Every structure is written in structure tokens, then in C-alpha cells.
Picture 1: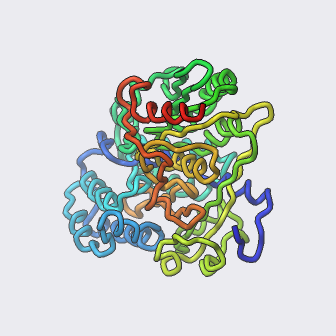
Picture 2 (picture 1 turned 60 degrees about the vertical axis):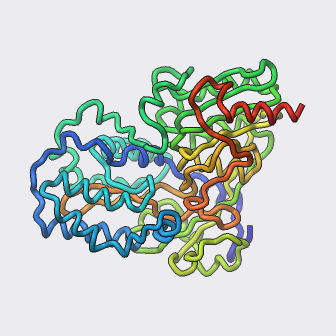
Picture 3 (picture 1 turned 45 degrees about the vertical axis):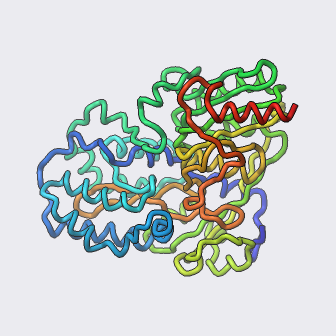
Length: 440
């Protein structure tokens, strides 16, 4: 990869790698959908306050959101052109709850799972998680937002009790329903996250991981390592992340790939930034200023598939070589097959892009969900209501310049990714067994 002005040394690579998304499952799973129970029907906001909140949200998105043109191309939605319609929609709200729902419906038209408003369970979860992960990553700007007095008042004093069914907060409509999650067989205990199987004794093993949520990391690590230690001499390993909506990249960077690879694995990625003032504290918390380059430097990169708006809509960019080192005493010498589907998103999408870009696995299934390259989604709070929303703050690009949110990751072998029925009867599993048979 060509570098403008300087070349990243290994330490720089590791620093940028750790900027990878950490809370994507939380963002996409905990955004507001049906967790309004307990919000109440009281109307406290005036029309002027609602209008000011709307204009604030509009400014933040219009100046910082990276996928406005992508949304036009993929979904035919010219979001900026619809401002009058959206404003009328939210100002019709008779209660604060209706206002929140209206505002969320406006963001929903951006068609991005990292973008939307938080309900009470989502607010509680991200606040606790930002605090817990501060030792790993600088969440200062994120915590500044969630701890704003008007935000704390809205989510702790005015929301009211939330029923247990709502408090579960798993609303990731790309990652499968809660019922689907509950049916996934597991060896990892009550959280039901890891499934292992021997499909062909001595030859083909199966490892399925439902979520990369940080809360699973410590619990799943010994389950994964124990199973892999028993199958390292197998010819084939099926790694199944179908239905995995993401979580933390550290999950697979620490728990999985170092045990599988036999030599260092690399993948080149880029991120583009709009450059507005609001996003700067978030960006500077994660990346050294010396590693943020003017967008004009893209001309020095070999990126044949850059989106047309790259040079006109964005101000800065970064580039990184994501690097995973093998763990001594481990390494799978056989074929690795990664099963993917459209529910693979954010941090699980980061694994899909890394696996394909580095060539460590053959991807089997359908095109993924995308938006897996870059850092944590940004958050903002409305000035009057205190309602909190999240949005993607950068456009992640693969090594050829393709926008990951737009192009997603295309598998090497396309096949029906249906997960219903016994493992050996699923089309993707059958296809892998066919491919493995040709390798004998």
C-alpha cells in the first residue's frame, strides 16, 4: 500500500488495528425499535424545543454521516432532499414518545443498522460498557455525551421502569430474533453462543459462533481453545458466523484467529472522514493527528473502486494494515471455510473482510451485511429532550477502494445460507463437504 509522506511501522499498525470497532453489536442490537415501554405518554417538549432538536440532529447527520450517497445508490433515498417531509413528521408528535419514534423513523431512512436512537436498555448498556472498556480504548468523548445532564435526566429519571422483555435489548433485525438465538445449540453455558461438532471424524470439524459480544469473550475462550486443540490435525474446519451481528473485533482477534493461522495474516483497509467539527474529538481520541491525512492523498493510493463522492464529500482519510500474529504452539494446517450471510455485520463483517482480504479462509454463503471497517459509531444527544442517537462516522474501504457498507463482502462460493434444519442438511454445510471432498 502506498503511503502519503510516511510509512507505517509495526507499532503504528497495531495502534490502528486496536481502533477497530468494539461496540458494534451493542449499537446495532440496542438501538430503539420496540423498547419504548415505560417511556410514558407525558408531553414535556414544546414545539420550539422539538424543532430545535430536529435541526440539531439534521445538522449532525448532514455534516458527519458518510453514507448519504450510498443510500441513494442502494435504496433510492435522497435523505437530504426529504427534510421538509421529515420535519413535518416529527413536529406532529403529541407526546415525547411520539416525538422519539418520529425522530427514529427519520434516521431509519438512512438504512444503516448503526444509526438510530437508543431506548433505555441500550443507554444503560453502552454507558456501562464504555466505562468498562476505558482501559482498552479511549471512550472519553463517548462518555462525555452519555453523561450530559440532560441525557442522564432523560434516561434515568424520566423513562420509568422497563419490563424484562424490553430490557433484554436484543433488537438486531439483521442478526436474527431472540427466539433464533435461543435455539442455537451451545457448549458455552446459558448465554448460548458457541456450537461445536465433528462432521467427519478425523477430517471435518465445525465451530459456530453466534455473537462477538464482549460479554462472551472470557466465557467462550476456553471452549474455543479446547475444541480447536482437539481438531488442529483435521483437514477441514468450518467456521460459521451466519447470523452473527457483530460485537467486538477483539473477540476474534484474540480468541480465534491467533489459534488458527500458521503465519502472520494481513489485510489493508482505509477509512474516509467528512471532517466536521463535531466528529473531531472522537477521531482524535483514537488516531494520532500525524496518521490522519488530507483526502487529496487518495490520488497516491491504488484504489480503482473508490466511490465517486470520495474526493468531494470527505476531508480526511486513514489507511492501516490490520495484522494478526499466530500464537506459538497453535495453527490449523488444513482448509478453513467461513460461512457468511446477510446478517454478518459490523465486527463480524470485519472478520469476513479480513478473512477474504488476507486469504486465510474460503468464504461460503451469501453477500454479507457490510459496515465492518472502521471505528466505533459516534453518538450525539439532542439538546432539549436529551434523547441519544448513534450514527456511522466514517466510510470504510477495502484494499481496492470499495465501500464496505455498499459492496459488502462477496463470498468465494455463493450458496443458500439457510440455517434451519440439522447442520449436515444445511445447503452451506453440504457445499463445504463437497468442496472438501475435491481436496482429498
